[in-house]
Image 1 (cartoon, rainbow, N blue to C red):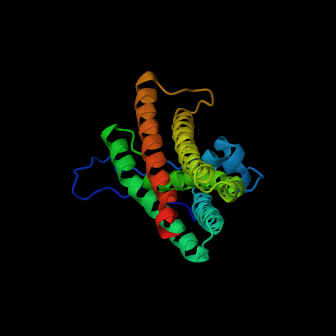
Image 2 (cartoon, helix red, strand yellow):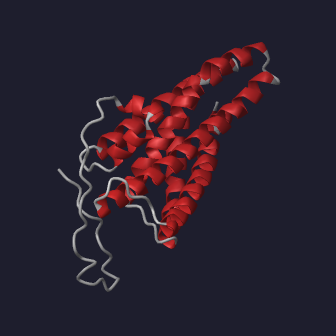
Length: 235
């Protein structure tokens, strides 16, 4: 089933040209690699998935699963390292809190895209945010082992410093990834619309997309860093 164009508001006097259905971006075919590999290594392949109406749902579901698994694992490891037994509670609630932080970042980013006349279709924006957060969550899960060791060795200084560093690194990685995905997405859609595989964004378009990408980086990194920190109060 292919996605339809975004519904138009009945409160706005759209012209007949505005009501013409948008052309769907054709898929370039499967990348041949699992989503997990693309999230870690190839933002361009993730962008192809986001622009394919038949594959974007798999990106959303896969990213949610990765976020839930990785954040739960990190929260459980950090809770056990601090000598607490109720790790299952902090693991489950931390995953939920991270997803809620993504929902909180969606509104400001979408509103910014409208103000800049660089509106991203909501379905693709949600998928891009989830894919970016999944990348940050994978990094967070990889930092669980050094966090456990440092907390066991020194729970007063080394452990908390590593914990803070893990939150900042994971949030920053997710923000950097959404910056990259939005930039690539704008370039791919422009090339498809112009029918030129070598086309680039105009100076004005690149300026607006750059502002949106930087604001998305800031908002997503901030909200995710707070979301990752949730288990500190829950554990």
